[in-house]
Length: 139
Image (cartoon, rainbow, N blue to C red; front, side, top):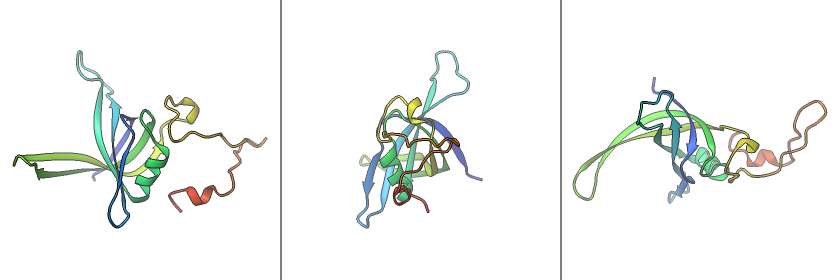
């Protein structure tokens, strides 16, 4: 089974582009801390990710540089020949599901996900603002 689960921070704002037929493609890099660090070795891996369609649009709208992201997807390898005639091999994570890795108040960037929290009822549940269903990328 080809399955990947990552938690990391975006190294830059997602690069989102649209195809001629209107499909969206988001590319970004996650800095993922290594669990075990070797002496004088890197502390994180920088992993290239790509998302398509509604997932790409969700990432564009709600994520920015420095935000923590939890995601799962699959590894995809490929190759192409560059302009110098050299074959280049690629490895990307194709994102299938994405979630916020921390609450807004815990985040350090205050990026695209900024906004006021809805009030909380006495029973402990948050009031969901009217019209929010239309903004969600899934139904």
